[in-house]
Length: 131
Image (tube, rainbow, N blue to C red):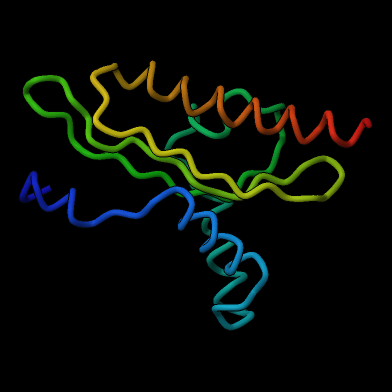
């Protein structure tokens, strides 16, 4: 937060984040102990309860991490993010990364967008299960 423009040099794409989550989930990157610790910490994340988890059924397990930048004087927020792994009722998992950037909407609206995307993905995966 010290330098406004620095945040634009420190970035990742949602596609790259999904790749990283996949590598992490398949336990290809860390020791077993470190993998378990990181997954546990992600499950215990308390920030962003209205983002990925916001519209999912109560009790849905979501191992996630949020990211949020400051908002400038013009009301623009460069980054409001949530990435994680959603556990479906059948035990399968969904890797998801939602990045909202350079938004002029307030935090409530931005978080609602993230929650709606997560719910749509969840519902789509659940519909596949029924086919």
